[in-house]
Image (cartoon, rainbow, N blue to C red; front, side, top):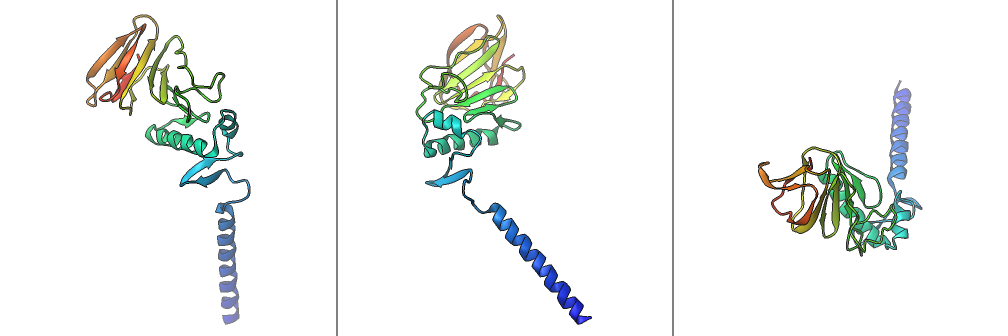
Length: 196
């Protein structure tokens, strides 16, 4: 009976050891890993889904890692959002584009003309918000959080007469824009946007 217990105990320990070894191999870095540490930041390497976009834009691995860090920050702030290109996030209300290092204006690295030398056009029927480094393009009605501070511009290019509302933290109206209208804005104090 003791021999059977000893055998079963050794077999159980062997199974756990094999499982631990397998788990370690699955989580350990391997050749061709998707990220590499660069100064404490994760840098995008050649095998990530959006690496070709960052390489085509001329970003170094460190710059690609910096960009991904900013994208990750927005993803954490915006429940239900998802990354759809190296610097574009699909949100509940539309799209958010994060400027890549070296871009003055945010341009989707997956799209044409991604140099970021000029602001992206705001499509008809959309409400677009800009600040240095980022742009938001709303094309769905609803109430959306706006975690921005500082100054920027807007383009209310929705159908004529559509009123966009910019709300305080208590959701009272801070200011409005009636389409078509463009202008400058102070985003500090605007907590919510209601495009239509």
